[in-house]
Length: 233
Image (tube, rainbow, N blue to C red; front, side):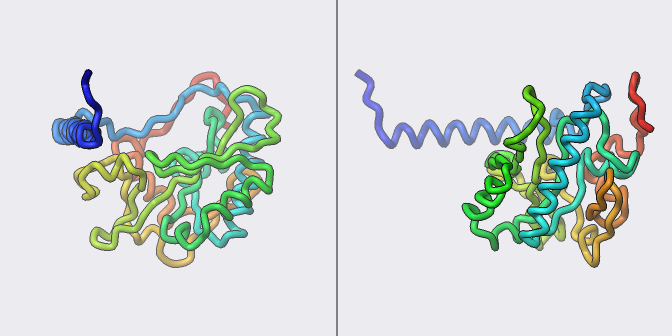
């Protein structure tokens, strides 16, 4: 009978990590990793769905203000603000970007309890460095809308903010070598950040308006999205 020992378990884990790291290095070096951020180009979300997403976004915003956490529009939600001044009608989620240094000053258990006390379910995806939030009282029975808090950590040596999450720690830490870190420069968060309208509320956005998108959508930030069968008014 094959004996299973702690030593063999450690060897298997080490081999697995080495193989995973090798594959990721190969993707980065030979350009097989896609650095293009994409989002859906069909208006398959109802007006009711979008309104519920906006209400959920407002609730999350108020809790983050209560905790005095810096949070700003990013990714597809920032596109909605820039292009329409509201949520894009084809999106099933909305995003705030938050800072890990500030989150570390809060007891995680209490932070999570405050969301549950507000009828919001929150969970943390350790591999991605994302908090995902649903409304427990959602009226959308199937695939309800949700909000993501995407966590960024300051890298003082590089002068850049970059994504956290354990799967990124296995990769080269330099922003130029690892596009999935979604790095952006510290100057985009310096000073008093402006507020811009999104729906009926005003939210904080990074400095420079579209500048953040030049880092998160490097290959297509300048393109205007044309959506068929979609009223963008």
